[in-house]
Length: 167
Image (tube, rainbow, N blue to C red; front, top):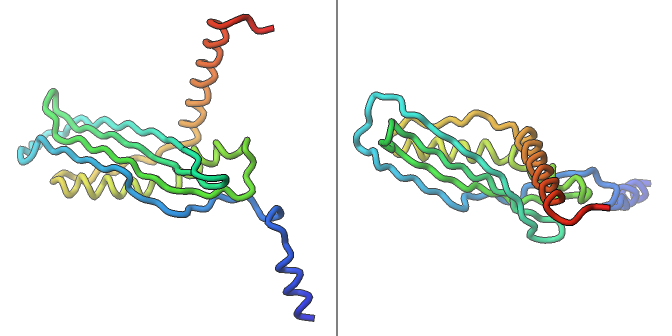
């Protein structure tokens, strides 16, 4: 009787498995910290500019590398206090996720999982550079994805207007 229950549990095909996104590994691909303002740490609050970008590339049939890129610059006028750049990546395996759903999973959910680790690396780096740690506000990766989709659609529409007429 127990053999039948074990056999039934083991016969569940992979196709019936729930869709999922597995993180296989995560790592710092590139980290740069320039500290031209050292050791002149003024009491002034510098203007801090942050830019973030997300990218993904296919590694195999089911594995993708997702990268978060950050560029942070702290300045007072023309005086640069520091520049921090980070590319933090993870390799994700898609399980039972259709091609249509792969892009949102990779560009919304995967970076959401990577963000806290990238944030910690940047906070530690700026603290080790002699500044208060940079604590990035959470990023709405859904809004960023939708913004990029809208921009891609606008670019696509412009290409059709400039090209041959569409029948």
